[in-house]
Length: 117
Length: 118
Image (cartoon, rainbow over all chains, first blue to last red; front, side, top):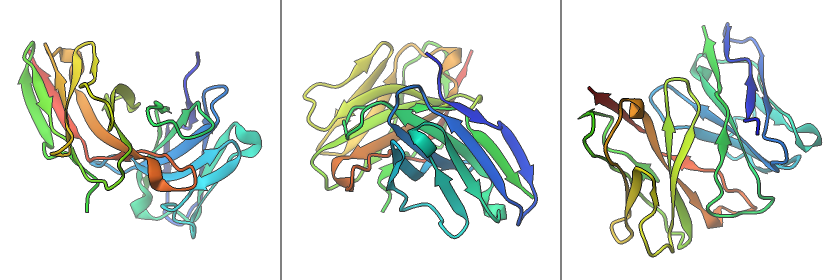
């Protein structure tokens, strides 16, 4: 089965520019997550979708970050305008169940490495 | 307070030796799950092993085992007979049941960089 696909793999932008990342989860997975991983730290959850609805965006900086998951499949994460501290790897993950199952494994993509200069 | 604490930023281990990676957690939720993920230099997160808070036995998956001490709130990963390919970042993570609203995202620690030496 194909894994979680993300693009682009790398992106360099200047501060105050905008950028968008794309994620295609594993086919049939209802749950999609976006994580931010700053160098030297563990991933931090930004937003969780269940199908095309948001169930948790408490850690998403909503003044500059936005995300959508149209039709409950692909998702896009946007940053506008970018700041230097947004430099990080943005990981997309997906999982299968449509409701909370404690031992559910999340499958991760390879991430997009963003550098803001 | 940190929900997941990994106190070893880096470790060097000789090939074929066993290695223990430490993880302590903090939660008041009686139902939670603990995960370990491996992150090679290529960047993807690879699931290794899971331990539920109500599981009576320590989880095992091949060369990976989890030393779960509930009273101490620790969930250390043990890798037996380490191999060169085990060199990577290792992350401990937790899922809590009562995050609310169906939210079930993982909370990760800062990770341990494991280097296996020949």
